[in-house]
Length: 69
Image 1 (tube, rainbow, N blue to C red):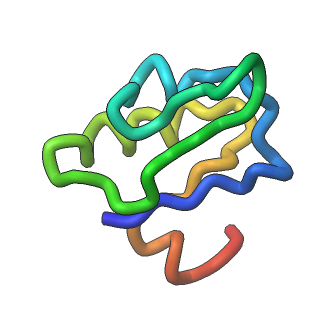
Image 2: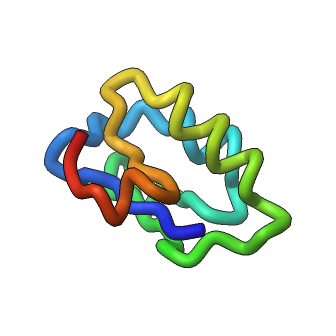
């Protein structure tokens, strides 16, 4: 699974960090770091993180290859 975060849309609410800390991390107060290649063990957590994002900045799986929603 691949994941992409639209960093221009991301507002640093950090819901993804709480739900999938092995994939998403905050650097400083607002800079989001993430691994675009999601380990299989993290798939469900990343899907939950994408669903919880208040600004829908996280694209997962097929959405990544389809581009922007």
